[in-house]
Length: 284
Image (cartoon, rainbow, N blue to C red; front, side, top):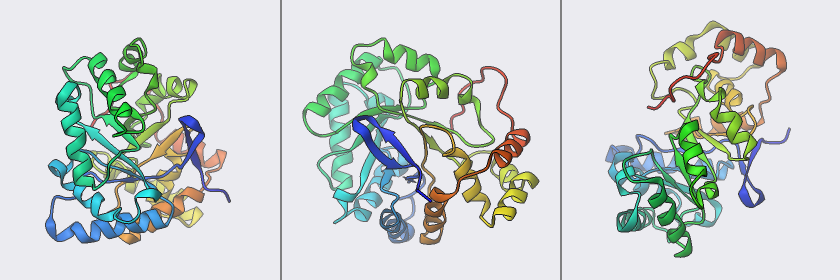
């Protein structure tokens, strides 16, 4: 069975599951095992690695830098800038600091981590400048809701944004009301963080839900694999779970080949229905 992919601009096909790094780099004793897990993920085809200057205040970027040493050409590298750094000289300096920690001279994708006080126009301008300087190949956003994306699209150059990274999992489906359909219509891939509700209050409810567990047992897969398969069953959606061990990375990679049946999707939809109206964008 073919592994699922998500198409980015320029017909760039990336595996629909990548690797997140939130909470990595916080403990020196775990850095080697975290880097080993990321390297194993790349070897298994999970070539997109997502990080941010916020994660462990640059510590996660250092772990990623260690992990991709000698593998840079095989990796699609994503990092994110704090909103208060997302304009003018601050953005240039922040990007250069991230590049130094990552041990590379360019990012494949650079994201505004969330919308702050700096006008979107300034962020678009500096993203274009960073592209011209060769420091980044593409840019996008994170934690922007439907109205934010409309505002971005009204700015000159705003439609060059190539992705919106948001919280999305089976128990948090608010984006399906307007944001996800809009992104699909405009061919803007969605990157789903916390696809297993790793950092959310609903994790235990998902992991122990009887319907979720019944389907996973029937398929002979783990609950985590089922939840990842559900996320990437949606058109144009990529999941970026964190996996701090090689074992979990292998489990995540195997989920790329799982396709859920219409009946299984219907059972999950019945157990965790999408909201019937607009809800506030979930953020963790």
